[in-house]
Image: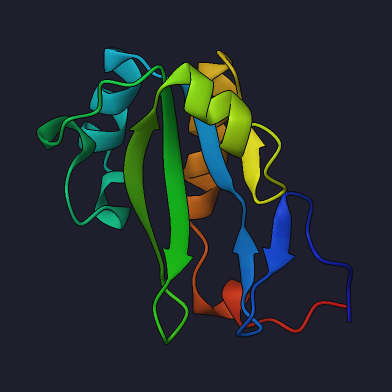
Length: 121
């Protein structure tokens, strides 16, 4: 068995999950999430079709019963984010590093049941 990968955790059902991602909100990143073929398939609702007008954009990452990863997008006002989400150990914070955010979500998009169901120690 190998160590749990960096920026991942084991959820209450035993699945290995990447942390959710948070970044300063901007229209370009929402459009990228909605149009980039590598990541848009993970969303049920395309991020550019829902109201995302807060200062922070968070991509919640979850899984299906068989271990496929899917995402949802939501925004938070700065006060809420600083109080409840900024120090959440299950959220990876990117501030305004959009390239690292894109790289991280592209990596997440390539994961699936072989990863999420792996028995890391």
